[in-house]
Image (cartoon, rainbow, N blue to C red):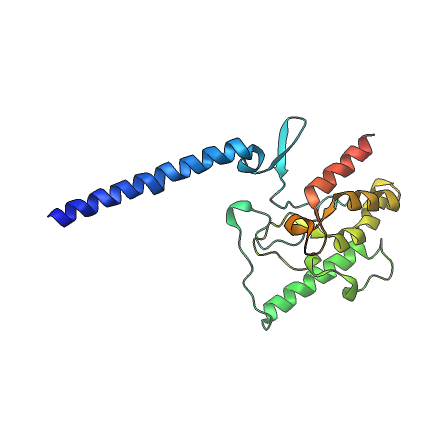
Length: 194
């Protein structure tokens, strides 16, 4: 009976300490030190939340905007997952072929001579979460031709916006340059409002 009482007290104490107190303290510290990040890095326009810097969105119905990479989840952040298909599966090969065809159909008329070999891998593959908010700089540069024509802007101006918003991961020390699609599209809107 003594061991049972000790075990129950230990479970209760650890539950309170690690299941309640610790998460509350960490949440409080995060709110004080990193309030924007702790709240999900939300992006507002005109006082209305329009997205998050951390979650990709579907812009496929609007050719005036840069497009996010394909999503296995339909960009639903509540159900993130990877398509979990291996390189030897025909389903994956068929899916990639469809993504390549769509990309060439959408971008090919604005980038003459664009071939499947020119398409960056992130333009036709899903991310591990299905809601990656970034695309590669190479992908954005191909899309710049379409965006410029749809917005009646100079391609050089659109490319300058890409350059301004491109960054490397890990404090700029490693990896390929990428662009946050939502932030880039908002920059396009600000440029158009001038």
